Image (cartoon, rainbow, N blue to C red; front, side, top):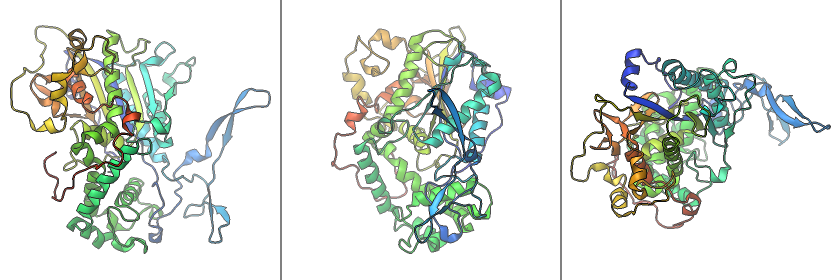
Length: 512
């Protein structure tokens, strides 16, 4: 739940096992959490934790486009300094604990360390997909620029992390002098689906509050919370002296301060007292906050649909578009990119995995800085020794049927649609369009580890001998079950209706 431990590059043996010769890589879509940042809010100042952190050298090096008097474009180089107010409400410079006004970060800003780790992530992506697999071109030219698609949320630390990862993937020496500026795609905040958007989706905001309230009811008087109060309660502000899920600061805010300070080393002015880093405290905070924020994706299809369904629908649509594009090489210039980088957030990473069944709040931990998911699309080569899809066997409804409650009925009742689009649900595709997905497989790698998705583990839905290679049809079928038809409209349906069932047992039981 802080800096991501980095594994060494894959060995030749690991690479051969992960990328079998009978599967041809077609497309990669990477969701990457931003790098290390400062806390979102200033907390625990009475412990000596500094409000202003001097970890943002970029503040001295900003450049912006400006229009000159002769209507030409120029670049303005400028340096940012922070300002605050004193006890009399008068303006004073924002300074670090050592009195410096330089390199001062804003709340929630990507730090120098965060820039380093996202740059390193881009370098690891280059080593794998350029140097080892030879999937991407080694250099970007005007002809090959379309091989890479960049996307970011409107939040600055996500944008800057995308820029840093792209720089690691294609450093300046690998980009042609004639290369036009690389596009980075963004959306307006109110229609952004690259993270669970409470501000843009009123019904999802209701659901999120309901699950948060339920978590507070479950844990505020629990043994876990009593332990936290014994260890760190003495540092809470006098106006909210007890640690709770919904205290001030909230438990998730406490976690934010713990994670940011842990990531940035042992400097005394950006560290909390030692009790905050005790193993039992870190584990307890992580466990409760993970349930508060992500259990809804396990229990509620409405939560999945409104929280992350738009993004999963986008990812799936681009896979289908790639299939429809037909055979291509990674260095061809066309509308179907080879690799995308999307700068996003911890809530994006965990929500996406949980909605697909690849993250369990009982077992898994809050995503680290620079955590990432690679969605890899493969095409099976034809040949006598090529493994096929695992055979279908009849069985009773499996445990995951409640995670995807509408699939059986959807497949059975939906008519085939002759006028399909890449977003058309699998159940509505004509037999001809559905057959085009044959021989394509999807695999997720979360922080370099392949993920087995429960829906894809069933016979007939994965590559024979390896459940992590989900058939594209099965992956699309699972994604369709919580992809909204019209996210903006559905975000305004059901407002005021009960959101969740109460739950009093602990620990978390079987997914409902």
